[in-house]
Amino acid sequence: MRRMVRYPDIEPYETGLMDTGDGNLVYWETCGNPDGVPALIVHGGPGSGCSKGNRRSLDPEKFRIILFDQRNCGRSLPHASDPAADMSLNTTEHLLADMEQLREHLGVEKWLLQGASWGVTLSLAYAERHPDRVSGMLMLSVTSTRRLELDWLYRGVGRFFPEAWARFRDFPGLADSYRLPTDTEPPISGLLMAYSRMMEDPDIGVRTRAAAEWVAWEDAVISQEVNGSPGSYSARVDDPRLAFVRICAHYFAHDAFLDDGVLIREAGKLEGIPGVLIHGRNDLGGGACTPWELARAWPGAELIIIEDSGHTGSATMVNERHAAADRLYQQITSPA
Image (cartoon, rainbow, N blue to C red):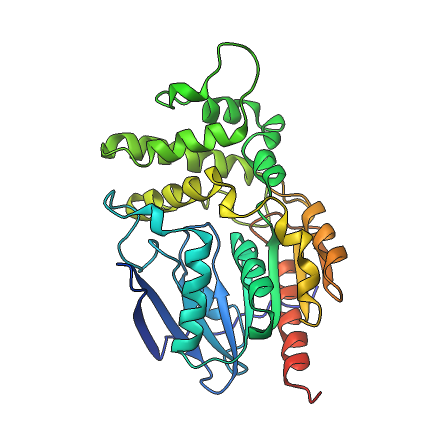
């Protein structure tokens, strides 16, 4: 195996809080080469926020690396850990508008999008809305947040982890409306909405307990990823955990505020945008079927399946990501 490239730790040369005009302030930063190819890091979750490690995910000599914390998480304000933060102002449409406002604010004509997990969903939605603003796409741990994907992640994969699934499903305090008086399992949206309602409870104890159960389930799903980062969800603590779970439950209870299946159905709009899809074969949270279907619907997209990786990656996935970024850089900068 080729040696895993590790770019040096870098600090941003510019940061800011972008006023969206509706009471939200979105944190952003730029690092790397100010004259390099603009590249936007679209973080996952939703609600994870960006990390210092995201700055090292692309070659800082080739790219102008732009990071932003999506609404109500990371360093953006108000923070979703505060029950006063208005989640009605946090939808996919709001995030797409924020991305466009940020692009204009930074004077970027086109940018490469690098997204992982939920970041893929948001990147696809943006690129299908604004294909002329996207120079390339590097997508990792591919998800389009269809209902069948949500049903698998929050119920289907419980066949592998029945104990953890039962605890997640039967957590005391879930809305009574979720439970049915028969053995019939209600729609998964009911369970997700029950968690979403608990994360809106004014009682910090209720929110804290619900968030702990949510991340425990997420950790169960990635628990077999010996080459990745098992336990990474529960590693979030305090306010970041509360924000992460509140935002995740809010989005997933509402099908990510997208028409079901629209991102794959309209992937033909991405024709002409060079794209690389990288997905772990052992991603129990989301099978390789989604990137495979997306690659078939996206003319010219390159699909790479990593045999030793799950959802949280591996050294092989990092190698492939760096190699793919180099290929995309060459395609973007080569004369037409």
